[in-house]
Image 1 (spheres, rainbow, N blue to C red):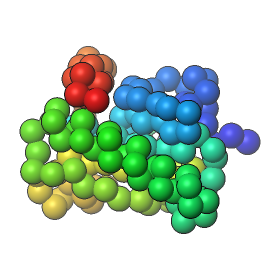
Image 2: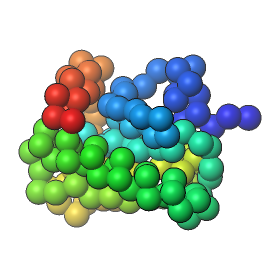
Image 3: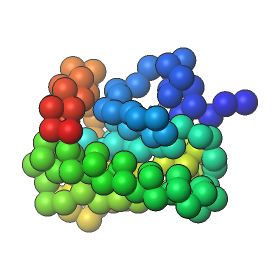
Image 4: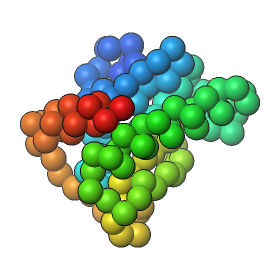
Length: 129
Ligand code: AMP
């Protein structure tokens, strides 16, 4: 069965999409630690980050770097934090989290956003890509 992220990439499940290219896809995390929390995902469904072939692994980092630059321009924050977990969704992904305090890197720190706030974030981040 396809992962929930493959379904998002294929347009079977809606998401707040930020960007995509031939191999990668970025969208807002639906349960964000902080405003602008974004997931960068390889389109190829592989569970664990370190199982990606080198080209895909490096490509994911390059793609994430571009998204992180747009996030940093858009969201008032000290820096963009990056983490990889994968305990919930077995499809490799990088979390990019605009940070002002260490607590935002813990997945118990959550912010709640309206649909309109998610949509505005998408527009503003895309304008800075
Ligand atoms: P983890 O696999 O532990 O790295 O966490 C998976 C992340 O995916 C969590 O932060 C979830 O909030 C996020 N997530 C799960 N389903 C969706 C979805 N449909 N759209 C956006 N983000 C999601």
